[in-house]
Amino acid sequence: MTPHAQNFREKLGAFFESHSYHVALTALLILSIFSIGYELSTTQTEGLAHAVFLFNRLVVVVFTIEIVARIIAHGPAFFKDPWHVFDFVVIIVSLISFGGYFQLFRAFRLFWLLRLVSIFPQFQHIVDAIGKAIPHLVSTAVLMFVAVYIFALLGMACFGADHPEMYGTIWGAMITIFKSVMMEHTWSDQLAELSKTTPYAWVFVVPMIIVLNFLLLQLVFGIVIGALMRQHAEEEHVAKHHFFAKWLKGDHTSEEEQHHISAETKILLHEIQKLKQEVKDLKK
Image (cartoon, rainbow, N blue to C red; front, side):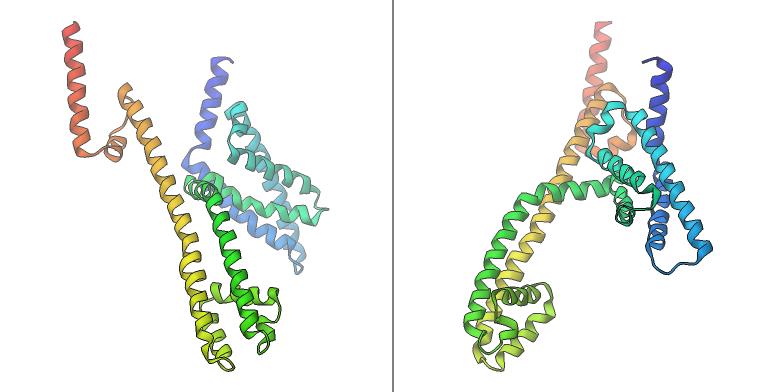
């Protein structure tokens, strides 16, 4: 590759990392989402509908040019980033729907909004953390399903005869319990209803809420929060590693130094710099 072409790719890549590009792309994405919603609606005015139609086609063209330019800027490395691949797939689906004949494909363009995740690193961190937590979430979901099934069987045995609309079938019982767990006000209504025929209904409802809501459901939140904390710690570790690599080359900024090192570490690093300078002077 010639130096001129390499310089052009570097400038193009820097543009796609710039704040102004992110702001412009975000604004265009949000406008396009509203315009697609209007295009899919059944009540439209003729003049505005035509303008929205042209705007959506223009957005598809702009995004196509943008994705091609990003491929040129990053080269083959573009397809090594999952978020870049996601953007590429969204644009391909948009091109398929360009003719406007496939209503389902046109609706797929609503996934443009998910491109905001690929634009802002903060969103990427959350998605990455949740992705890493999926194995633990699946295990917790299985455990919760088993617990709901057990309580559903107990509910059918205790209240099925008097309250068939709630605990007449296993499926209905599981739905009733799920609503009680997910909607805080529902369990008190259920307890009041069951207590009309069974005074000891609280013996069933209270342990069910404690186990399913306060233990298992809160465990899900704990897993997600823990994953976010681990993700943040990993990112801080990587950022510090990059900073010290730049510090050894003398290529760091004062803002990076202030962010990544404590006052004690700063003193130690400055002492190391003085020793390095003294060694250089002795070699002279």
